[in-house]
Image (cartoon, rainbow, N blue to C red; front, top):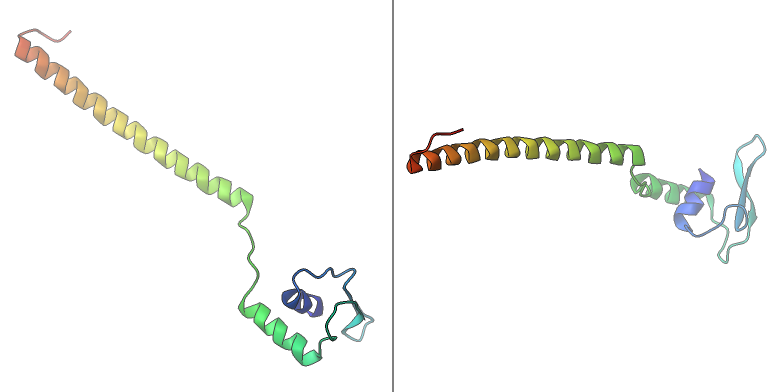
Length: 108
């Protein structure tokens, strides 16, 4: 929790260089602090943690889910185009028959 709270407050900090959090079996603590600000108090860490819980960082969507959604939309669009093509083909056939009947010819 400490490292996440610090990263919330200092998002560009490097947790291997700017600060080090350790846990020697009796709880986590800040072992090293190399940022140009005072070492945060327990109260500050708790406040940052609570803010982090209210405003979690943006996580991009899973690529597999995005691709699956795009594929599903593409399949739906293709089906709609096939239905439209079938309808237009039928209407075109009806128009051809009407033209032929107006000319007095029979459909072949």
